[in-house]
Amino acid sequence: MIYLQLLWVFVKIGVLGFGGGYAMLSLIEHEVVDNYGWMTTTDFADMVAISQMTPGPISINMATYVGYTTGGFFGSLLASFAICLPSLVMVYLIIRLFMEKKTSSLLGNLLKGLKPAIAGLIFAAGLSMMNTQNFVEIGKGENNISIVICVLAFVTSYFFKANPILLLVLSGVVGYFVY
Image (cartoon, rainbow, N blue to C red; front, side, top):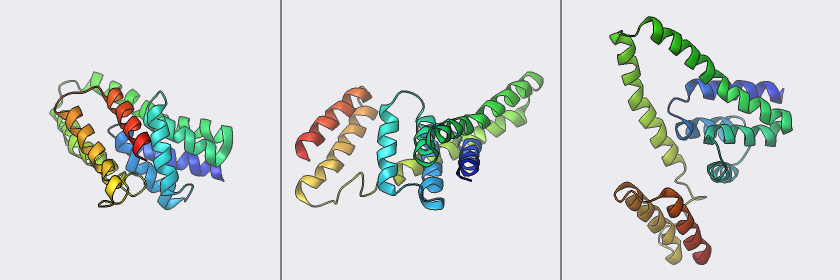
């Protein structure tokens, strides 16, 4: 039964998860934490951190991790395959459609309409990660450093185009010494 649930959940996420892995975070959290209770919010936050550190797309890493923790080795293979399957089918169909309808304005407008939805999903994923597991209580001395690290990382990344890997390493070093 767990294998059918894994297949259903990750195929559904693969179908609805436009915008890449970060846009899928809120969908994965809703299914894995809220609907099925396969892990806690804290476990989910840890899974996101591990998935970001390992090579490969975050959504596939997360599917593999959830599949392994709920269904063992076969569960990890099934969840990884299930999250990729809709994309493979859609890419195949879209390529065929583009070849037939290269100049269609309807198709162009449809793709333009997806952009705001993708931005919203990424924003929702960012908001869902702003919880007490990732940011400790504000106003308690050294605990404000989480907010300072977040703001400084954003500012240096967005405005000064700092190397994200360097920002992660520096944030980890600061966090190690503070906490």
